[in-house]
Image 1 (cartoon, one colour):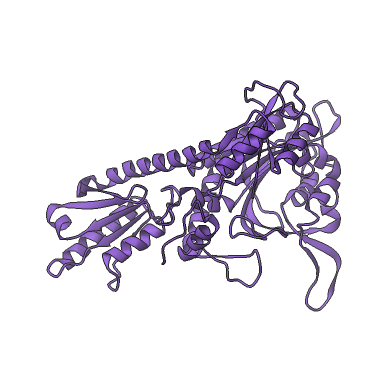
Image 2 (image 1 turned 90 degrees about the vertical axis):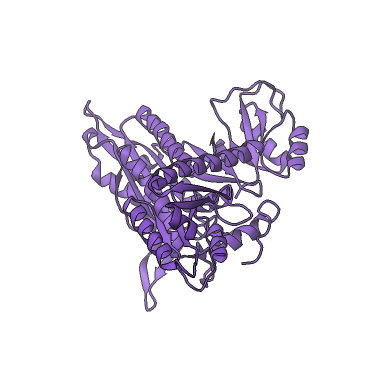
Length: 477
């Protein structure tokens, strides 16, 4: 492994190097935008999605599975949705030997698949609410340049939740619950974020409104982490999802949906990594602890025996641990390799550690070592995991905060954005569509949204009227 490019100056080169050379993925599959996940990376992806699935379970959601193929006539029922996804959706028209009698679409997301079934399942208010989720692969033809994990044509782990409610008030409360779930999820991954309500012109196809979670990557571009969407009754009307209420009247349901993809792994690697490679948060590290025995001419059997006992003890306690006893690599080479792959802690065992009944622990984030007694090892690991997590979040929060720029005019916004070299700019906005679109156009940046609860003083940077919100803009993935 050669020296890594600078993460902040050459982010794309740094990113490509670490995701491939650290065995996260292999992008050599001969189909653009579709990648192979290697065992090390896939284990981290599974651990990450399990956190989200556990949260959804705790909040009363149930896991289900719906088919990958959607008949064209079902997909086309909601015209805004059809228009929004028409350029991204793959179509299946034939087998190798014969033409199909109707077009089938590969799901870009599962609204149409699920809602067809909801129209069959739901007949009474007693059937509500429904709160389901699935973690599946979805397909989207990304016409822009693909980027492994971040922008792909097959998303192999897309967690999407879909809920159905009796009233608008219940649906609005569900949106708040979803934001709470996602906040806990991203907090657990030590990814700081801002939550913004999307402007009307960029709202999810077929939705009433949606909230997006954003953070800032090392190249100072904004990236969407997940979306929480209030669908209102649009899909209910398109799919005739009705129920008989307590008053005997038939009414359309209200719906919400929210989704997070494997993109979160790409973001996590990018934000926490450094000049030495990856740094995994302990909670999702495929290997949390690596044990490296130090060769000795006189005591190596005793060293290896102690290393194996510690490995067995830590594994029995629930830690993801690996003993690296490869004889053809020096300890220094092993240190470098596991640091590059981001293992949070390394335990070193040599003659001194055997004789003194101690172990040396190296933490990946600060590159520091401490020595602890054998009988204090598990408590020391738990404490170090907490300290590592706190340090990773502190760094990431500091980065995000330093890249959110407040401007008082278009000129001020342009200057500050150029001075910093990117980031997210927020400018006072009256709330009118034409002014929001004008901010985008004048700055040459994309609108991310606004925080309805954020306090603001000042005048709209376009029309001069009293500002209602800060409008956030930036370049985004």
